[in-house]
Image 1 (spheres, rainbow, N blue to C red):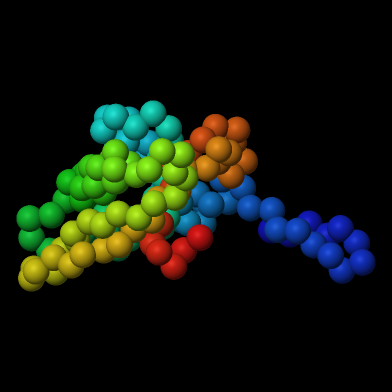
Image 2 (cartoon, one colour):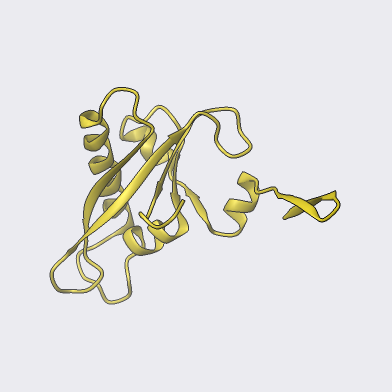
Length: 130
């Protein structure tokens, strides 16, 4: 969504509501709270689709366990991050077929203001997302 300012200039306005409705962010805050997080946690749609959603025919996997793996590995990365960090990388193994799992690199960023909210929030994304 854009709002025109005049003379051809425009700014982009992207709210949390638009992010959720477009499938760009998935709120996993309830599970994150159970894992000990004190701020809302979101995954980008790409992270959710590639790391949480279980592809058809894949044995021995479920979304709850896959989400828990992400939250646990991110929590470990937070513990080892330098003081005052706002962005960090971590990895998780994901099995999207019935063969060997692959290592997926993820990036997490905590922002003082979450989109259109006033509270800090943590967003997990793929390295090429921002």
